[in-house]
Image (tube, rainbow, N blue to C red; front, side, top):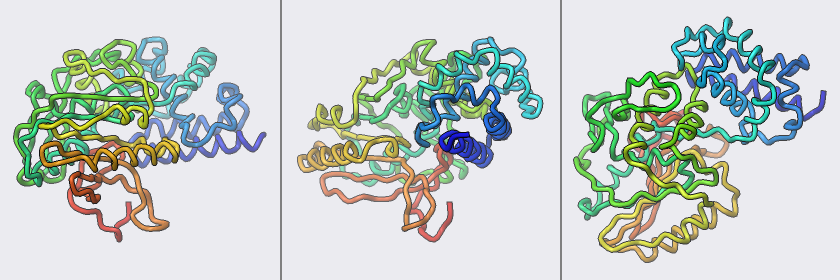
Length: 379
């Protein structure tokens, strides 16, 4: 066995542990069994052939799982669908493994082809951190009345650019209701594309931030991604749904609701890197420009990151109270050397500059705990 394949087996096992910790026992078991199959030279090894040297951040294991989930969602793997909660299955991981392996045998080349597609869930739960962070910034602003212009880097299908349309509920009983969320969470059983009536993040926050504005006008939505997804199409919706872990029905419900919104309020996401895209962004008098991103920074080359930060500083130098700029991020970072990565809501607003840590949340975004994260805590 090659060193590269041994490393991929270890990465699959690491992903299995991550799925267990993040609430997907189904994927935890299936990935652990997959690692054993690859180690034994089974069909999993044949599927991964040629990818032995893929880097860890490429998330090869999740690409494979998404390719299989796509087959389930499109009705081409009925035996496995009986165990996938995303299609009404029982979630029995032990019973799912033989059916899962059969899918790998029957659709080897199709699953191999799926390894070329990076996993994109366009995680709607992260709007709790992004929109909630913006509401906190507006609450502290001397011009909270200015309309907002949203700009997202790594926007995927642009669903989080619709964050003002969602409802956010806090565990302390407070909420914030957006423009298109009165219909509640989607109850759609269409497994291919969401047709829900709204998105409810419950709980979105541990506490409702005090003093936040009840109404925010979003006048523009701009997004870029290296591999944008047309979320208002059946194919785009299927691509996003297939990347969600099938036993996390709350995430699937949120996504289906957001896909329904995207059909009514399409958002264009252009194919572009962040640096090129920000070069075309200018501040506008009478508008608050907000550049945000979530859980994408680690995938960006260091030089491109610096280019974006330099451009934001350049834009910030021209900001004024009548045309403010906010850089808002929900990204993993170490708060102290050697410490664990924690998912932190951070914001820098111009004029003035200076970063503020607003809160932290689990990787999928909910619920957010507001307040500067304590460095002595563990993730």
